[in-house]
Image (cartoon, rainbow, N blue to C red; front, side):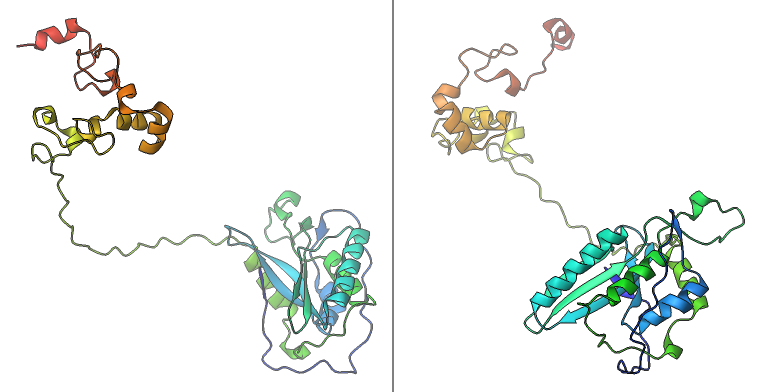
Length: 305
């Protein structure tokens, strides 16, 4: 769902001399909310790093764009305190009218973990182009609402102390690096024209159908002279006709059924045979199965020999 911005090279455990209180920014007013500034990052974002929060990239389905978010993972020894903490986060979200983009709890035999990631959907990015307007700048991202929400979560009475290894301040991304990353995430990636490599596969000779009636290079259904050959007993009804001419098979094809379904619905093959000759040629078959052209006699008369 999301990935961290960077992994510090040098690591150290959270020390006891770290500040116990997290600065909480004031509640922003109005929508959309502007993205964080350098002053916001220095005063509120970087202190949250001491509380195990980190910048995350929230991916989108079927898109190369990503959104900057503020994420954290809280671990608990048992599911009970994790559920209590989760309930307080939900109540805080309703109170602040700011819902996290990602809120999930995972239970394992070792512990329970709550994953939180917050971002602002109705946000306003900085001016990147001279012709930028408020409509073109409307883009979700990291705002003071997210920093305030993360700080309030860190101050909840059920929030566990940060135990994740964090990097020293020298390894955290600076403001210029954050701005560059945020802009890269929000810029669509142009598709590159790549020519797929096609393997030259030797064409295999196609199998030619062999008619079981006349032996010609066609199927039995396409054979126009199969009536001149004595067929074996029909495998469906046992009648003296080819299987493709079986009335039960014909009805199954016409109604989109299997042979068993057609036999159950329409009865035996004797009941499915037409009770009158074909109106097109006078044969003992259905008009839909007639192989002669369906045309008026006056149109076919000039072609008769």
